[in-house]
Length: 161
Image (cartoon, rainbow, N blue to C red; front, side):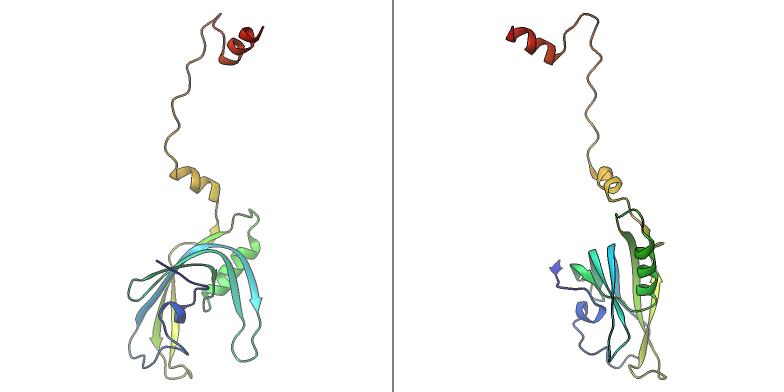
């Protein structure tokens, strides 16, 4: 796994200034994560984008894995996720997963567009519940004490007298 400053589809595929010569639909990324913040970043040259903060993992077309606390995605994924983050009242963040494909298009300057497949419904997460699921089972509880039997703390206080 490679730690990255930020996750972008171009960045994880080591593509600068877009994919070249797109002639067929191709899977280029899977991005999963828990988004806790969504900050709109206006741009003069390109479309505005959201900078997501949280915990993210991404996988490129070669299966390489990347991790970062910052993520950028194209629309409509970013709009869907930004809305879910803005509506999150739990404070735990929003879990999400998307597969991204490039599809050839002659009617746009880049020569392709993104096709996005949601892997799950973007929804608030309960990070503590997820953490609890990963823990081993609780040890067996102590049997109730028999009548007249002193507890550990009662035994200690009687010795102190």
